Image 1 (cartoon, each protein chain N blue to C red):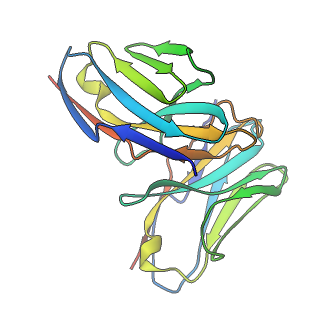
Image 2 (image 1 turned 180 degrees about the vertical axis):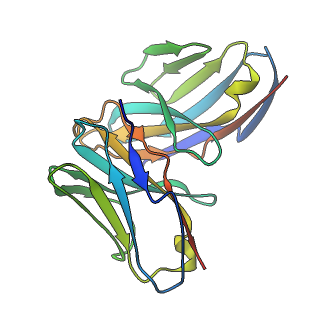
Length: 110
Length: 113
């Protein structure tokens, strides 16, 4: 059965303090690993899709990496507006649906 | 370019009633999926439609159903509502079932009282 575990559950950072969020996964055939950002009361906002081990993608202060067992979302010099819940999801080969982790709630303090 | 549009945004229903939620995908997107989000269970897959056909279904009771129209718009229906059905219902669209990029709408907040 697919499993996605995100850690930590919550993270508080000072503005400018870089850190990483972890997403460990178990899936029988990975088609893609997705990262989303979700603000309170809103739908998830697409950030990245990673497909194979060793792949990296960047967007502003965010960089996502993928290994065969986990993915990291690195946040460099975060700002208060980066505060949100970050969700990781896996997509199994041959399927279109996503299996989500429970998210990491990030708070960046000015 | 308009995003995924869901209506209504908020609704309150009484236990035992039924509800229909609507989703208009991004223009040109033909694959639509539905998810339920609750504080306890997180985001869980309900079902997926492509070309008016249900391709995949999550582990939810038969009270949850959906359909897709020829213009790719989709509706989901929940009958005989229970208190536990209170949740944020999210619609997601992608170009096709290869699902390389999947975009979500803002969701419909359902409260069952």
